[in-house]
Length: 579
Ligand code: PEP
Ligand code: MG
Image (cartoon, rainbow, N blue to C red):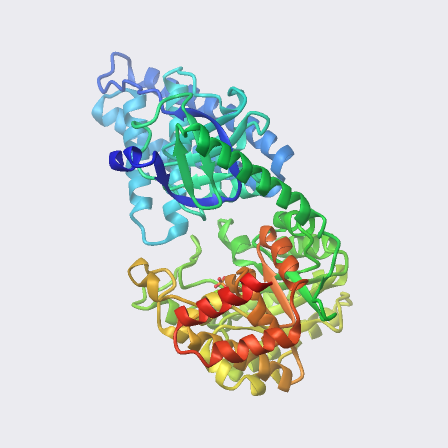
């Protein structure tokens, strides 16, 4: 890292939550606790210390849970309910207990060792979900350890004004304690965009740059930092000129944010009067707030697998019904597109045995799992049907590649409807059943699929990987993963044309729909609706308002006659500069 610090005082990382902040560094370093192995106490006395430490940790977690509930809602507060459950895990306790007996060691030594072993085991698993749970385990372990040793843990709710927190890693409980009146941003050495703390930063609209590498030993408390969380950069001790530049950038960002807010209630209508829908993507009912506040008139993708991933066992029909009902009601009649469970690939469930596969993205995933384990799909369909009474729910099946899959799912769907009808349970009789279009197999025969579905939604994240045969999660070939590749754009065009030929509407809910440079070509191709993360909605609306259909159709024609992704990007860049 040292060379980076000397060169322009610039630190590079990953932008995890957008914004620009200028403030003083607070280096959040852990007090180095001296952990003695040898105990002078009896086993019973050590266990007593262990129990007392656990009580202290639990009390702190209860407080954090309450604060989170007030600030961020039930969803985020549930993270700490999970921490408390983990803290009270009997297996973990007896593991520590037996270490104390066998090694005749202190409670802190046994605790530290046990947490380290478990967390390392989790961190070494392939699955991102479990990897990130290792962080949660260390978080509760630390709290417990401080409790046992009667040490004070740093209180992040009581920092000086205009602080920028720099930490090795921020745990969800750290993030929840942050007081937004005093803290302007955070920077972490490790962590990625999908870590819980990054997700929380986005909900709090707190700028964050993560994964900057080892910087804590290079920085000092109170040093002035500029956090450019648009680019993912941190500038240390900037000179007066740089400071001025970033103050202006920050003003511009905040002004733009305000201006964009003015678009909140406006529809996305092009210069020549064509209206398209702009919707949001959500992972839980709690994300609806962010979609509405950013001016999204609907949900184009609710990834329900997160509801399944948060639990210790399959969510019941009633539990699912509650979640879907909340979303349907909050959207007040605007469409809510709910995708059936898309597990497999890079997503697994702690309570479901998934086979170890050579090619999980080509394996037992999404609709394939649900058609083999029909009861999962049936429960979900019934919960969705019951919730459809409370709003405008549309149901969507992931990773379809064969019409037979659509027919099988539809047959199950009809049986579920019949069952509810016989029981006198009300549901929306006109509820639509559509599919995610994510495979080239559907693109080649789009019109035929369209005839058997109520709508299409393009999942470009997967469509790109399946069209180009490039694993979307493999860093080694990340340079090959490019939705601007002409073959992917051609597939998108085929899907849009095929949907319209078959008489149905088509939306897009992959990341490409929120890519500012992609909007003009998608509009030109005739896409009916765009669905994206909340923060992208205002910008996309603003672009659509500047477009004209004919110009965009011409752009599509030019783009599809080009041979490479870089030529295409160049052509789009010229177009965007003009508008
Ligand atoms: C997609 O594949 O584009 C998509 C939206 O689904 P996911 O990213 O959840 O696979
Ligand atoms: Mg997908």
